[in-house]
Image 1: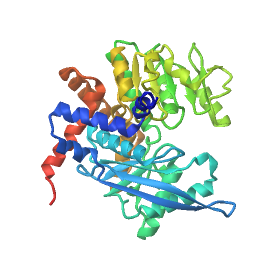
Image 2: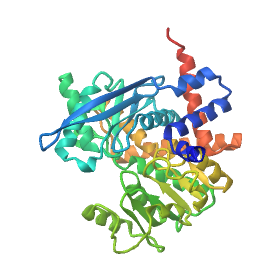
Image 3: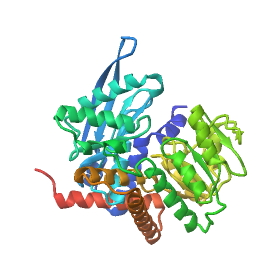
Image 4: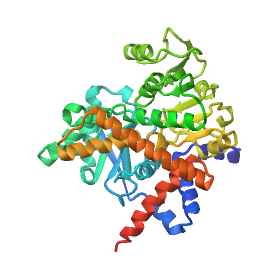
Length: 424
């Protein structure tokens, strides 16, 4: 029985997936085990206790992490996640994927990630502010605009970034706008940052549909997750003429075979907090059923490992554009490849967020802000260039888009390592 259970559990472990993808790229590039060890081992890891005085006066000690995976190409960059399942292995995997993402879209950063293990829905706004400020204080030796630059992720937002920036700045004695990205525009945030990840996902999703010979106008889609990425992805897909048949969130899923009225659904979510109960739709029995709809495009934009060895054979979409990090496991990749599904990997599909985070950092360092049209145009240019590069490499070597994207990124980082040499 133990052997039977081991494979699915390992298949859904994001760190196992990340290391498997790295090992495959190292083999394709014919690097030795030394390079595998170098790129597979985080540069720094920090685990901190985060004591919190609750609103009722009690004290609770939470656990936080920050992992800097690689610094060869520039300062560490990556989100901060507040979630009940945040673990060191998850943060390690996400930091590694961020390294490849930055390299793939030619941004001078290394990958990092952080998080605190808590369910933000169970804490007041005041409690979350105290958690954020203590967590930031504990990480002060690591953070900085030239060393490690956090951004929002699951369970955090621009307000959390404002608290982080303020805490860091107060300790430094002056305002440091470039220490985090994803801030409000009033505090040096970039126009276009809030929807950047979604725009990037939609840009390559539409390109992938075209690559498959599927007309965009009238194509069908399902979007899993209606948060930071999925919400605007659904809106932008609908604006492009795609019929979004179903969306889901952590509470449930809704479906309309004629196509959902996405703007009306957004208003419903704003007023109720969930897609559940949207009048102009039918509820789906289980949220996961959305993954198995017969659609042209599936956008998993929630969490890791939702498409895995147990359910990949049920996926009917022609194209998958990964809005989340690590939504498809290595075992699922094999099943989808055999079925002829085109998977646009996360390190390409959802790179729009880090691209515009980079733009925000550049603007903050220059104290000169760009127009939203400028930001969106530069984002589209970066995404298109990365898409074309990955497709060309995949076709040249007859490999999947994921293997092509990871291999290109690993080669870029390895070249930086080799050029810098080993110190001492």
